[in-house]
Amino acid sequence: MKQLEPKKLLLLLFLNLAVLLAVSLPAASAETIDRVIAFVDDKAITLSELDENYKTAVKPRTDIKKEEVLNTMINRMLLLREAKKLRIEGANPDEVIREYIELKLKTFIKITEDDLREFYEKNRKEFGKTDFDDAREKIEEYLVEKEVNIRLKKHIEDLRTKAYIKIQLDN
Picture 1 (tube, rainbow, N blue to C red):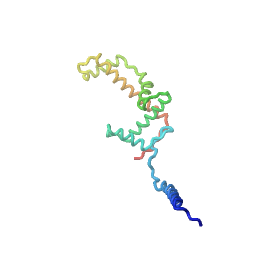
Picture 2: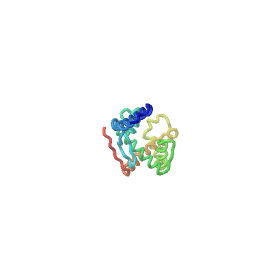
Picture 3: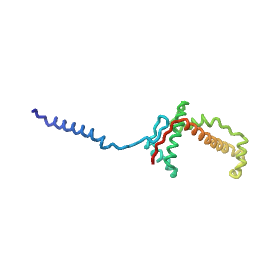
Picture 4: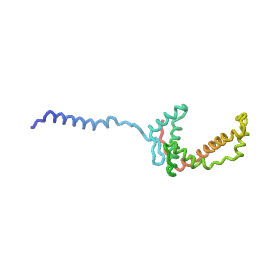
């Protein structure tokens, strides 16, 4: 039988050790690192994504629950999907959503002069000595935002009924 040179023997031992490690390591570390906790149509949301979003959301609002953060993530996915259908682009997802809301909801909101005056009269104490003409712009912004929020809530409800959403969040 032929003897191997020390370099070849060392190389052969190293390769055997590498193969042994490669075979045994995956079995030793077979733990779940991440899991899917929700599906929105064909897109998945993982636990690590939820945890990351939750950490960000809990800073300004310590009372927020993971379920609320998950629902916000789902709503954002639905809005981004709809924005993509309209080919809306932006520097980041927040910008895309703002543009979508502007185009799809805000442009159709009309606040009449009567609405503005009625709000001013009902809330006159809040305005103090500020007259209607000086408060008009702020009132209009407030009423438009209020109406956008109402319509956005309804729009998201409609999107959610049309989407396949499955939540598998076990605390």
